[in-house]
Length: 190
Image (cartoon, rainbow, N blue to C red; front, top):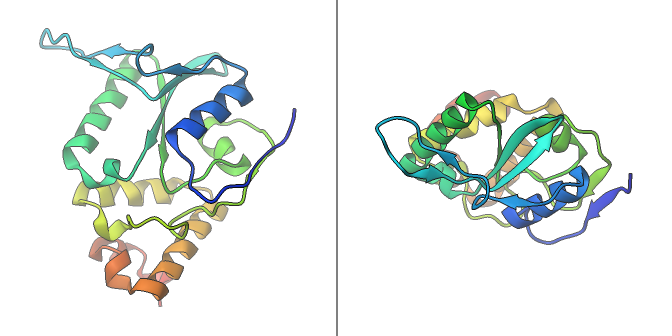
C-alpha cells in the first residue's frame, strides 16, 4: 500500500476524487455514462447517471461529488434524493461527497469504510478560497449541509466549524452563515 499525499492549492474536484478512488480500489474508473440507473415508475425512459461506480467490499457503490450547486438549487437537491432512492431500491450504495470535504484517510474511512494512508495539504471546510458559504445555500441546501455536518466524525466536524469561524472573522458572520446555521451552531460561535 503506497501512501498518497496531495499537495495542491485547489480543493478536491470530481475528477481528482474519481481518479484517486480508482487507484486506491485498483478498479477501472467507470463514469456516469456507463453506470446508469433507469428511473422507476410512470413508464419514463429517462436514466439517472452517476459520477462514478465502484465495487466497495463487494457492493456496487456510486460516488457522487456534490459541488456547491447541490446546496444552492432546491430542484437539484430533489433530483439527488430521487437518485439515491432509486439506487437503494436496486441494492446500490450511494456515497455523496460534499465539496467542502477533502479526501484523506479520515474521510475515506468515514464515507467508504476504507483504510488507506492518504493526506492532503488543502484544508477541510470553507477556508480554501471558496466563495460559496452556507449563507449562499437555499433552505434545502442548508438542511442538507447541517445533516452532513452532524454526521461527520468529531475531528472533521471541528475542522469544518473552525473554517467557518475563520471565514466569519474575515467576512462577517451574516455573510458566511445563514440564520438557520447560526442558530444551530450558536454554542460554537460566541
